Length: 355
Image 1 (cartoon, rainbow, N blue to C red):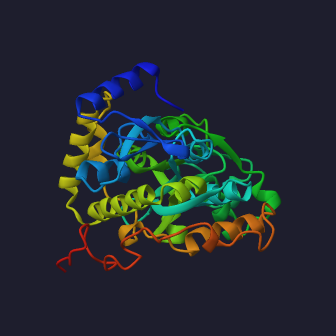
Image 2 (image 1 turned 90 degrees about the vertical axis):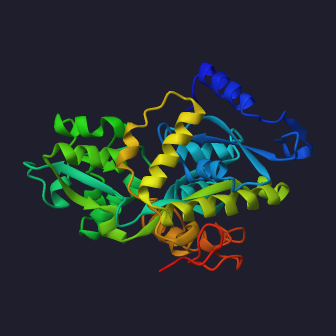
Image 3 (image 1 turned 120 degrees about the horizontal axis):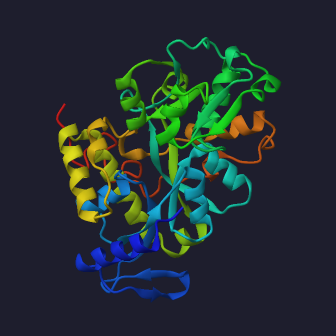
C-alpha cells in the first residue's frame, strides 16, 4: 500500500530541499504543524497522476495546510481505510464503499467529490470484437475483471445486471475477478477474463490498439455523475476545522481550475508537478488526459450521489431501510461553490467566466 522506505526517504529529502518547515507536535489532536503554523495532512497519491489535492498545493490555493505524501494507494477502499486507521488524514473512494464503511461503524464524513464521469472521462466494460457476449444474460458464468472488490466497478457491474433484468441469483453467477488496471487489457486479450474494466489511460491505449467493443459504461447507466468523495475522520474535523476548510476550498478551486482550463495547459502543469516531486514516474501517459471527470462545478457533493448507493445496499440486504441517511454522511459547508462564497458557475478565484 505504501512506497518503499527508500522512496519515502528520497521524497522527504526533496521536500526538505524545497523548504518544508520543521514539524512540531500539535496539542492533543495527534496532528503535526510546520514551523509557520500550517497543519500537516498525510495522504496517499497515485503513481504517474496528479490529484486535485496535489494540484491545489502547486497552484498555491492552500494557506493553512501542508501536504505530506506517505506513498501511493492501491484502491479507494484501501485509501479510506487508511484514513480511518489514522495512517493518513484523508482518503478518497467510491461513494458505495464510503457508505459501506460508515455502515460498519467508521466515523468519517465526505467533504468533497473526488472523481466522476463526464462526457470525456468515464469507465467502460469491454469485450473482444469477436466475443459472443452481447447482453447481460450472456455474462452468467463468465468472468469480469475489476480493480478491487466492494468498490466502483463491482457496484456498476451489479447495477447494470440488475437493470438488465437478471435476478440476484443470476447476478451471483457472474464472476468478479480482481485484476490490476495495468494488466486488464492483456488479461482480456489472452482470454483470461471475458470482460475487462477500462478507464482513463488504460481505456484510451487499449482502444488505440483496436479489437475491443464496449458492453456497458458507467456514463451510459447514470449519465454524468460524481462517483467518489474525499473523507476525513470526524474527530479530525472536530479538532482541525480550519485545516479541513482550507483543504476543501483549495481542492474545490483546483477542481474548478481543471474544469475551465485548456487541456494543453493542464497537461503541462501536471508534467511539471510530476517532474518536481522526483519519484521517477512516467509522464508519457499524461497525453491521454482528457478532463477532470467531475461534471459538477467545484466538486460540490449532491445528496443523490450517496443516496443511490444507500438504496442499492438496502436492496441487496446489506443495510436496513432507514439505517443511514445520505444527508448525515456528507457536508458542503466548507466548499466555496456551495456555501455562498462563490457563485456556483464562477472560476477558481470566484471570478465570472466568459461565456
